[in-house]
Amino acid sequence: MILKLTPAVVALAKGLPIEESAPVLFDPDTYEFFSPDDEIPSAILRETLVEFPKVRRVDVQRAYVEYLNDKSISAQFRNLTDEQFWHKFWKVFDDGSIRLTDFCQFEESFYLKAVKEWCKENGIACYVKSGE
Image (cartoon, rainbow, N blue to C red):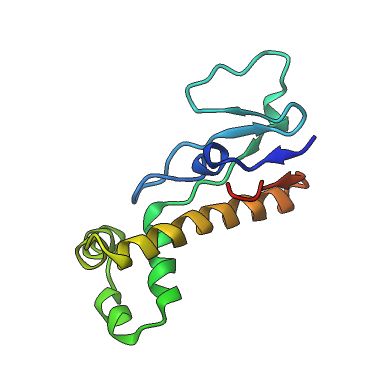
């Protein structure tokens, strides 16, 4: 089997803004996903399930600021707690223009990269259809 990394699958990696969120579990035998609220069928051994990656959104923001490699922007975010960083980030980047668009593109590629790395680490064959 091969895991198709659709936008819906990649979206499972989006965690909460700041705090940790409950993991989604993946069955490498059936390629099924189970949310924290799902009842796992008795035929599936819980110990065979693999935790799907969850990336806190503030971690994506921190990676984006680092990616920009701009000393003046980096200085604004230095030594901030996660909560302070989150709020400051939106004040600086949520301008409805190219900055926000650029971040959104970075964010999507960041989640996709995290899922691809997870697949590789767990020996799960995957692919992304061009244009998705």
